[in-house]
Length: 599
Image 1: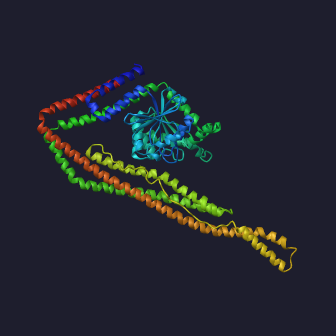
Image 2: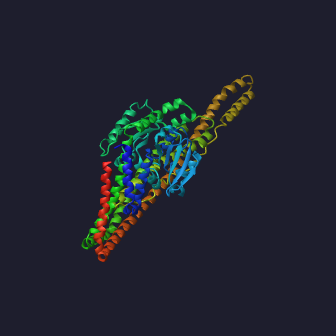
Image 3: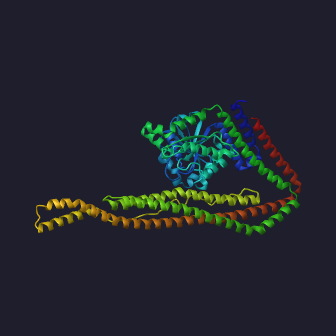
């Protein structure tokens, strides 16, 4: 059977399922199966660009297409799915969740409306942005997808990315050469990609121009070994370890400025070649078909599980249900104790997160203080006042903000891990999936910490030295030395100038360093208090949400059991019909899965 025929048969199976009433009644399954039918009809080869916050995903895509189109910044920019497809002329369509389509302008200024920093209720209504662009690589029914980050974002933007991942035929995963493959990245790859059968991953080690290969000549070989070791023992394996060094920023600059040296040195050409090879391989059609089948299987198995749970509940006799009811009473009796255990667990984890944050902040503070003090001590110019008040003050403020932007996402990851552990515990207790949402979204990134240091003006040291030199000359004239006066005055002036400058600089530096240290300590203390407060607030929300989830699950269980007992009393004659109907639905699903495997 050809790939084309196989896809047609798969589409026919899906269309048959969508005619079934029980599928139509399940909104989640119905939506996903309809999307799958549409994807088979479009038959795109989907390349998804993934990576954490500040990895340069949008900059890379801009370099790839040769246009500074997608917004980029040091803060998270992408808040929507941006799908680039081939079109002879640039165009932009805004695809809404309700199916409506709006036209936009394919320009950076327009796209900035949908960036994370400008995100409002509008973004939550958008399914994705469809950007048509005349990029040759896209010409063969290829779609390149820019996504929000995979861990350092709010829950809504994370869901946007996670929901799109199953569509991927290939993944370009951007790492940072300064800290490649963090634990959060490895966990994401294992849990969200490899576990879903997405093993066609190309790693791009961005910001590679920051690596000093003379100092660390074995960097690339060591990184390859580290990557191979990291995924060697996984249950789900990578298709192959394919990895390329890259400087997306250098590539984009080279493209925009027409500088071939920058483009060649950036590594973007090697990435283009690898992507083109990946797209043009002989197994592309087979892999697309495999992805369609994997998506279909995931949806149907989930639907099957739901129906089996309904069948089990209906098949249980009244005595079994009363037994479950008694077990529920035991759970209610343990409720207060379990909530207390959850609160204690979260409190302990809160202490750990605070301790890790404080340790990192102390290390950063000590390094910054040492560097700033050293810079001030070695400065020898007459513009010392401007140097301290302008350059040093700005440098400190910039470093504080950079640290906060870099470390705040780590706090969010730790908090989200606590949240997931609590949810997992509740899910295990009740044998059903429970999700908590503390809206952990990097709320500490806006700092507002200001540094305003004043310093003594040493620029008048020359004037003062000249005045003293002139005073010395006047004294010589009084004691009868007019001939030697000009020579003695001129000889004394440089020495006096240097002496005055050194004395004034020493005093100015001493005072400036004290002022800098005092203001830095104050800023660090405020930053620490702000971080502690943020962590405490999020942990409090996690505890409250867990208590609500615990109560809700218990209430729903009690309501379901009470309702089923009553139904069995009132409608005992209809039970056989209901169970037979559920058996038939399960049979339809099993038959669809078996037919799919034969495709």
